[in-house]
Length: 210
Picture (spheres, rainbow, N blue to C red):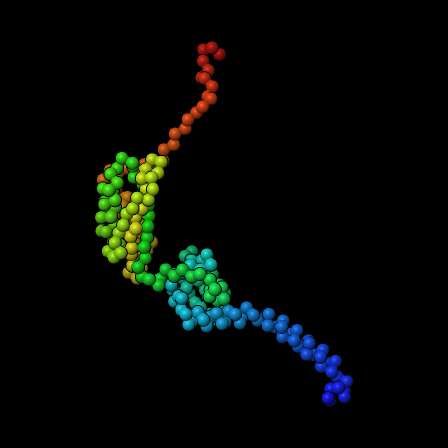
């Protein structure tokens, strides 16, 4: 009633309108900050990873260095720091290699088609069972992956424990051991062979007739 008496209702409407627009603009400006802060709280509750866990997130693989109120900091395997917004982390797909200490590794090796496949499989399994860092449970497996053009591809499956051994070193040692075992058994690992058939080739030129 006082505003109507003072004829100030239009002024008040303008002020309220400007305040509403400013509040909306501030809300949009702070949306990402608030979203990331809430995501950091939810991540702290859920704990999908811990410091120094090795994870894959948004096509980046590395160790978790820190979780702040705004972002998650990863150190990639190349030694680079990556900052990912917590809202993206919370809504993204996280692959955590460190949550389970046991981790499987695989690799392939080719043998000549003349080699006894069963004997080669057994030799590979025995070799991996005696490789340092390879655990007994789950057991080592070797399967025929496919038949190549000039060889047979065997695929090895073995497990190690990341809390005791370095994953990459165990896998590298396993490949080396199987390769040397096959060499000692004279199991050839041939290179691909290609046959080229020439058609419509002109006859050779007689040098004496030229």
